[in-house]
Image (cartoon, rainbow, N blue to C red; front, top):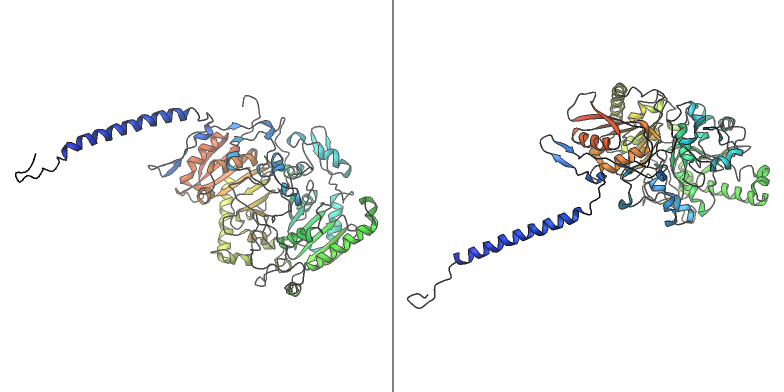
Amino acid sequence: MKHKDGKPFPPDKSSRTVPMAIVFLVLCGFSFYLGGIFCSEKNKYVTDDTTEAIDTAQDMATGTLQAKAVTFSVCSIEYQDYTPCTDPRRWKKYGLHRLTFLERHCPPIFERKECLIPPPDGYKLPIRWPKSRDECWYRNVPYNWINKQKSNQHWLRKEGEKFFFPGGGTMFPNGVSAYVDLMQDLIPGMKDGTIRTAIDTGCGVASWGGDLLDRGILTVSLAPRDNHEAQVQFALERGIPAILGIISTQRLPFPSNSFDIAHCSRCLIPWTEFGGIYLLEVHRILRPGGFWVLSGPPVNYEHRWRGWNTTIEEQRSDYEKLQELLTSMCFKLYNKKDDIAVWQKLSDNSCYKRLENPDIYPPKCDDGTEPDSAWYTPIRPCVVSPNPKYKKVALKSLPKWPQRLHAAPERVSDVRGGSDGAFNHDDSKWITRVKHYKKLVPAIGTDKIRNVMDMNTLYGGFAAALTDYPLWVMNVVSSYAANTLPVVYDRGLIGTYHDWCEAFSTYPRTYDLLHLDGFFTAESHRCEVKYVLLEMDRILRPNGYVIIRESSYFVESVATIAKGMRWGCRREDTEYGSDKEKILICQKKLWYYSKQN
């Protein structure tokens, strides 16, 4: 049709609208049809394992995080002593150089276990402290290799259903107490509270650290998972602080200037090799004025060389090389008698000033790496010199134990928002909180709870409030949180850096009580709640307790997942009765592996 002037009419738009609408509806219907086919096919490949059903969502009505009910399966019995980040099954993937395969190598996310670690056949609840220091159940740590290899050195002996620990060792055949007595004669500060924190490298079954507990000295016993099966597991089963670790290519997970004394009793660490790099790491973690104690080769080589399958000339050369290296790192020979030699880390800056000479080895470290950076941080071949701004970090400047426990450390000012007032407030706050915890968990303060972990401490206030009880606390500071671990050590407590998105450096069933304060609020954006709780279950002993102090937003979902791990949980009010924060008290049940599981 045309206009009267001969121009055509514009096309009628309504004539195209209907067909386009029909096409749109057909396409929508077809997409729904394809989606239905895809989803039905996808469901064929979805596992029946209900651990996959943890699909959290926010309940807008209650303002809390909700989780679907879960039930976790049980791992195979071969995983009874599973240590994910130091797993012997994965050693072949890593190099032999400097024993790097014994360092932490955590499995990728797709290899993580989503099952519960079973106890060994015949597992019994651990013997209680202090009896546990001298004996433990064989079935709890069922390893015969170390018994057969070390029984002649009196590390331990098996009798019936138990292991007994007579307190012997390679370098203390007369017993560990006599050995420590001699050490105290060489280092008087071990008697008067000057020395409080210690580290034992290559700890064996931790008899040295166990003996020091009665002398007011708290020791971190350190050993790798190696052919000396379960050294750290034996230590923790006995109720003695210990952690898996090795001085290799990475720094130990401790801040600089932390320990008052470090010890090696024939620990087989090649101190003089690789330019003395292992000694440099000991120097870093030892506070100025602190002591390094060595017994075993090459100390007392004049009388011992025949038993070391070597020559007197070789041992003399090794000792002279060791002494030269220690001197170059600003150590001085402090004392020496029989099989024990003691060196002291110098406090004055004159020695460290000499290290600035470019022709000196080892050199002074530059500012490229923080002295306290110690989570997957390579050991550097240089000396970390004391920071001159600190006047009260050296051993002689600290208050003696127990006064130092409640004295605000100088390094608290390095923490953002930290001050003497903030420290004192935190200290008093935890005294009040622990009194409340004691009402909720009456087992605190009894022999039912010995090994305790504060999974995300600030200044160690929770541990400080528990010092009168027969227990010890491993204080953990997140590698992503403010660096407060130096404060923990300055007040005479022990701890470690850790990232809870990974497994902790310990064996299964090694802690009686785990404590968390606002952990999921701080870390759930990085670490999946499910995996953190599964790791907690791995390291918690049967009948062990968990205290979760958390925002009300997370409590319900955590309780739901915990139920799937066979924990019994109950919700409690805080000491302030706040609705915004609640306390979840849980206890892990004792169960055994069976094929039906």
